[in-house]
Image 1: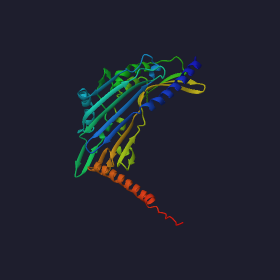
Image 2: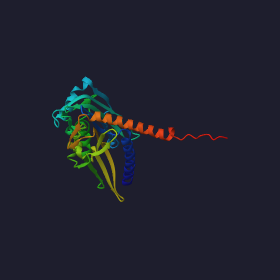
Image 3: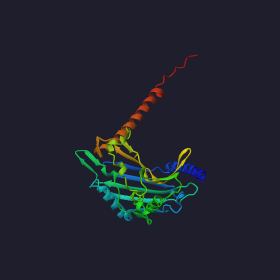
Image 4: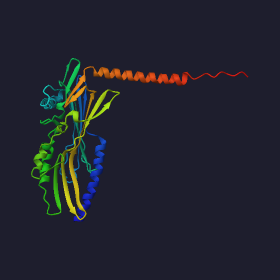
Length: 325
């Protein structure tokens, strides 16, 4: 029995590794913010994947494809706006679009997807005075506490509505084999079995507290041609729940890992700022005109340089005189 058990674990680990690689490659989750002097646009893609059904066959995430936008998104937009205003009181949300698309469980890949996309415009977080604009991004780490349902499925407070029961079942696992133990993690932090269901129940997808790191501490990648800076942050922890079945063998511990998991990277694009302090960006109010003019001037310079090279190398070649025979 122990040898058979270890073999099963090894096979599952291979399946999990290959499935995870495919998962990250197909649709990279990302939290994007694009800042202009007039407004801020937000685009968020959350990619949840789970292989927990391979262990607990009675569990799977709902299969759904639904969309909220326009007048149908009013309630969701209000919930998101309230969350932003808790950090930046003047924030106003418009043009919110929220979509969920999940797949069926696949026995072939031992994987299921649950994808959420959110886009919106954020206004009321910028001010201008004497040709200088300030934009407050402290709301970027917002968390929505309210339920948001699409197609009859809760897509925000998924811990309470979709994961709590299976978390309780996992926490109650018992083994008569002293070589087998169970480990529980939420957001990569180990949790005791009695606390596991409660902590899992608090998971919500629209919680971006991992981006509370001030913008000034994010990695900067300048683009001189566009006169912009891209700021990136990859939080150290993933989002979700993880159940580990560990078997002690003569060769050491063998783990079978079952998860409902996601990971997200933050990307913020801004005009080249005059300064950045914490989450406040100071910009020239004419920075976009300056960017446009700079790009035009640079393009003209390249054209002029090309013309000069052409004239020197082609048009100014010496003309050879024919010699008289």
